[in-house]
Length: 242
Ligand SMILES: CC(C)(COP(=O)(O)OP(=O)(O)OC[C@H]1O[C@@H](n2cnc3c(N)ncnc32)[C@H](O)[C@@H]1OP(=O)(O)O)[C@@H](O)C(=O)NCCC(=O)NCCS
Image (cartoon, rainbow, N blue to C red; front, side, top):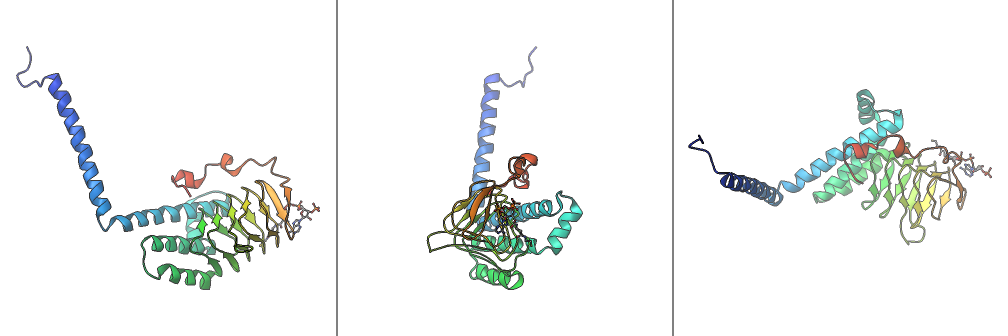
């Protein structure tokens, strides 16, 4: 015998559909309310900042120690100038996002005074860019620097004739004193020799040496697997794009 309170199947479907609809509507309303609220922008910026700082700490630790463990990450965060450069850079990005007057300027001055590196406000730095020695490095204009790029110190990434700024792809190493000038691309995993002046595109897995730089293939490139295939990028792990 059927139960007295049993709801007919058709009505069950309708009521489930209504529940789903009202759940979605509530979600949308809440999202719209949050997006309109004055807290939305700071909350978004703070989340981005925290993710960027975490990814930078993990990538730098991996670059320095080859593996990531808590003690190494703590030591990187507390003692390394390379991390301080990125910390100030991420704070500058957040401050610009929040449109706090003069904050980017003040942080840029602090970055230059404390660490000797000058980075333009439109420069994009990838995760874990490693300033092995930050002194004397200048990155200008709207230059783009990929993930895990290393600067060995006293480098210039700038324009040659006011005609544009370089793109440096992931995992490039820039030797001490090297200059990379103009609207050129330095391909992934290339090595720029100490004191080179690079004025032309550099294909991936190349070495650029001399003034002006001549390009030769990296001898170990054929044997070296791309870094990404050896290990997942930390940026991927924490689900970040550049
Ligand atoms: C370029 C570099 C990465 C070497 O790469 P590599 O693939 O091992 O290249 P090799 O040593 O086989 O050199 C290849 C050629 O480039 C020349 N070369 C290497 N480094 C050079 C440099 N800095 N400037 C000019 N020529 C250079 C070599 O004499 C060689 O020339 P050849 O083909 O006529 O014989 C390395 O020499 C370099 O400059 N590293 C930067 C180191 C640095 O900045 N350290 C700072 C520590 S704080």
